[in-house]
Length: 305
Image (cartoon, rainbow, N blue to C red):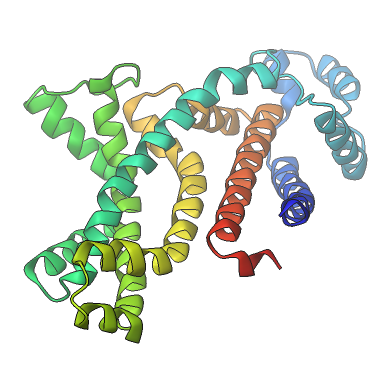
């Protein structure tokens, strides 16, 4: 098991370096001058040229990339061009909100998606199955920003049940969590139903039904156990997407998370903050995938090979 985990950890290194290279290249090619951003539009061009030289912005691309990777390996993500605050401090301040939102959204999507998916598979072609599939298709098609705004109009402005912004109290968490969980719940419903249908058609499940085995034991003890791996895959991938996809939800509900900081940094060409945020999210996403691989191995020892 230890060999399996170490192998997966080593595989993360080229993945993260590849992500850093892609994002660094995109930000390098994006129009805009960080030195001009720092000094302001009215600063003389001579001062801008001097600052560019001090910041190493005139160095070749390879030199700049190698310098950034070297600093990153030492835990130094640089300083924000806009605020002059270390990027690591900004991430440490902002990321907990994003992680809290992503965890809340994933918890709600699993809480809704898995039970409905199981019932849809067991009660195939029933009214419940039809309703759940309609919900899944609608939730998948609805954009998160539109759903968030509709929830604000309905439950904040008209009914006044929940606040329209913030993420500090339980009432403030309700609408953003629903917005983030809707699409993911739909995906989990469809995957759970599909996986369960493949298993419940197997001979050993039919034999268990024929012997009069308890329905709860057959469904949860046999069918769900043997169909859970694809569902875990979706949950792991969706959690990573929630960390990045929370940008829209944070913007709609005014949540001061890492997503809103990234959006503002991209607008201002604040390269250190953009790169640091993306790399941090990539590392967290990679660790989530590692955890999923470990869960795979615990459920099915054959996957350890």
